[in-house]
Image (cartoon, rainbow, N blue to C red; front, side, top):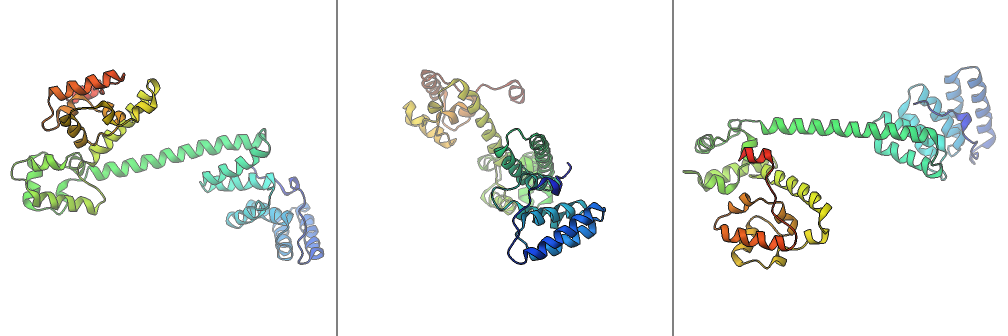
Length: 317
């Protein structure tokens, strides 16, 4: 993106240090510009800036020339100073936005362009540059997300044998076909303790190992369920009153056994309940067909229902 030239900017007010000296250096800088001697122009503008650091014309012109010779860091600071005083000059904002984009600071670039468009919604270059910034920002975000996913996948594929665990804990995990860190994060405490010869000591050992890495048992399953719940909520919100989805399951006036079962699964709202499948509910200890029928009936009365398994989930089952 080409930067706006100093000629496009209105002359600012000369500062109070030595206006006459500053004007002399500004005139010398303009003569150097006319002869194509950019470095001489920069030298004269730096002298003018020393005499009048609050002069917008000097500040912008010096930033512009430094930008063109590749001194981006100095140019950036000067452009930032040039836009401090309201109303900020449009071309200073435009050039600052370009520098910010080059440095991948897309949020700052967008802010500058929005300032321009706030005063001139039809500013052609600002509108065009805004499209570029938004596209770059999205691309940068997508690439960053991809890197994070790759990093996470690599971690999840780490064999559990790479971690310092006792022989008993390793043998139990091997017999349970838990080979990687990802397998372990998809396994809950009750599932581990339900396995023969797997005791509290091994459980504490594994939990401590995961805690050092900021992880916990069952985390992967919880994250997956959370994503499913959000998806179901968004689907239901299209056809269902949002207030109904946010209601407590206490509104269903369920039996004590059903209420305890839902509490064990961390189900507190209608949306939570509607994101669960029949199989998930039936997997709760002491939860039978009677409780399932009761819940389904109560939900139907409110025009709701439990989540249905999609084709991929049914195949997995």
